[in-house]
Image 1: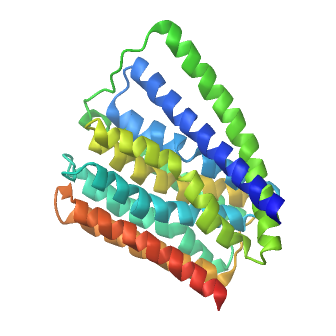
Image 2 (image 1 turned 180 degrees about the vertical axis):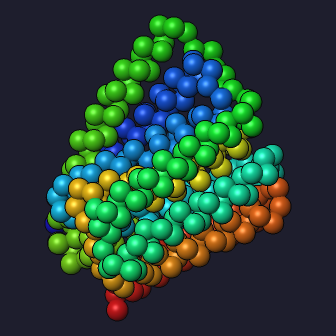
Length: 315
């Protein structure tokens, strides 16, 4: 069992590192191309930071353990909206101010889209292949709507990147993508073995361990965006990541292999996700700034979630 745990932690670390290099290389490429903050925050980084979840979802579905994908998505959404967002708010010291009123509307859309997989699971006790197609179509509609708003975001991401350096970052991006896929395969393999060795449901491994690791790219990008004075980018990344997780990741996983899960653990974690998403949406709707006190509340909510999940398993 010790060897399984060590190998699981090893490939989780590789997954995290490759995800970090991928995010960093994409930021540099975006900077070289002078892409706008909208494109970087809402689209590129929203997809890039969810690539670990995406690969975990695909490999778990191929291994017919798609409940790992579901647990990873729910756990990652919870971590993004509470732990990652809370840390970013606290690091900003003066809080995160958002200039665009439309972000309030975006949080409402994020909340509703995050509920969709839960609604589908409620009515069928499974997320079927048809449900997966529906989720991907909803993502397509969401992205079309976001692209229509790109003119609202005029700032560009700027950095002094030379032409010869961009080739290096493209190479890093490709290598990171390959390593990310391979490490995700082993993370799913050893998380399944770990759940057997510890007599734990695989969804719990996804919720608490895999989800936390796959959320670190959002933390890296988020703290970097906040400290460099681009708060709209972290908000865009988190909202986009939750939407992509809830639609693309679950959708593709369900198309490969329909998703079922441990009923009790799923609905407890689903209830927490709804609660945290609602509280985060309320924080955004009640003003034009997120304060450090709210960041502390979000972090405490994540800690409470972990304690409840572990307590339920002990019953």
